[in-house]
Image 1 (cartoon, one colour):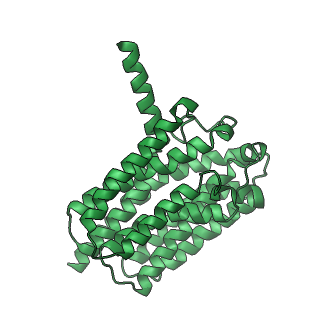
Image 2 (cartoon, rainbow, N blue to C red):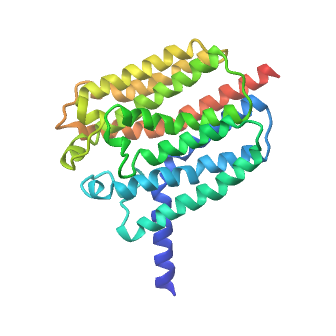
Amino acid sequence: MTEQLGTVSWKTRQVVLSSRPLSWINTAFPFAAAYIVTTGRIDALLIVGTLFFLVPYNLLMYGINDVFDYESDLRNPRKGGAEGALLHPALHHLVIGAGVVSVGIVGAAMVLLARAEHPLSWVVLAGSLFAVVAYSVRGLRFKERPVLDSITSSTHFVSPAVYGLVVAGATITPGLLALLAAFFLWGLASHAFGAVQDVEPDRHAGIASIATALGAWPTVRLAITFWALAGLLLLFTPWPGPLAVVLVVPYILAARPFWTVSDAKSGRANRGWKRFLRLNFLSGFLVTMLLIYSIRLAA
């Protein structure tokens, strides 16, 4: 019995690891923030939608990634922990099944709660889930198409916010478009910088990425440029949005030490990536404070 419980515990831990718990907030928060700021209320759709983008969405996205990247992950020293589970082949069907079922159940509840008032939200949700699947699944593998890989990855994080805005009936303004564009550039920068640390393992595995195509240091500089442009766009958002421009500075400082990193030493960028993961929590807290301030101003 103890042995059986140990096996169940191990499987559960592997399934949870495959969903990247450290990244859950990166998709749930954009939806919740967009919905609350637009509607000004806490309701069932907010709760179910946040749950959807917190766990099932990430389980499907990263679970599929871990399954289809298994062979290359075997050669990647980063895998097997918080930065990605090294899934045993015996767990592949379990992880994909858990992702599909949880997305289907919670997603259906979310769509039912949203009703038919905003049919465009169905298109946004479908596009978001397509990006989740297309990034890793064999036959599409957008992650192996340089530049498209960063665009798709950024879509993973921006689309929950877009869904929240659309399903809440938000009015599209130039300031809102500037905010979404800044968020998209942040996503492009984050993916590009994250790809730098894997230049050597990816090349050995025959996997293409924006970093393998451009090289390590050009990709770092491109990421820093995108973060800087995101900060500039925030200046064109409604108050207190411009205050958020300071939030891009820590990301630039985290990547700056790798300005001249070579391909051979690109693995050192993992230090900057770990700082990036921690910065997301700090940035999320500060953005929350700005949102609260924004809501109080509106009230």
